[in-house]
Length: 201
Image (tube, rainbow, N blue to C red; front, side, top):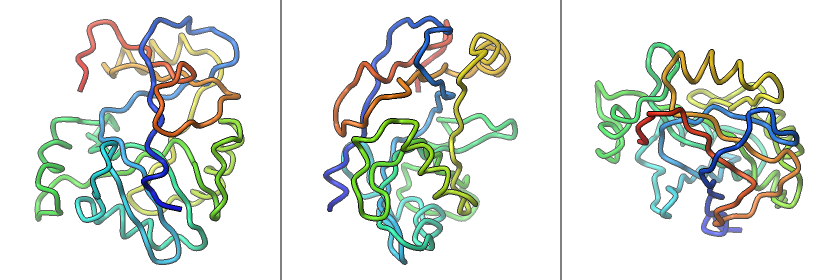
């Protein structure tokens, strides 16, 4: 099993009713997409384009390497978070383009939202909710510098108004609850719903 075998699944952008049945919703982060293979003293991070980012973010790779068992393969975004918990893309760019840790640089967090391999077993054909249950178990407790991304299943208009609009976030990502994970594809099962006027990272 190689990390190259699990390029990230991508979303499309189109309108979707906030009360559409059969979907779960996550906050859209402004970060760099990373897949991680880790466990039993090892960790490798890969960008969406396949570049090896393991040494770029040592606070993440060293933390994940301490997770017992595996191997595991996860999907997420590395972000710099501000004092209100919002992802700050400009600060991430400033840190990430150095391709290493530097004294005084912004620390990053790896925000994980999906699981493709669990204890060496490919789970991409399981439903999203099954994968999320396994991921929640794996990241309880979360390693340092790692964040398990939660989701919303109801009252989404309130979430959009109180979180996305009030904090000026980019938007939400809707995912079909029963969808499988298809590596490297742009899938209609994942949809970005943007805040009007939001500037993409």
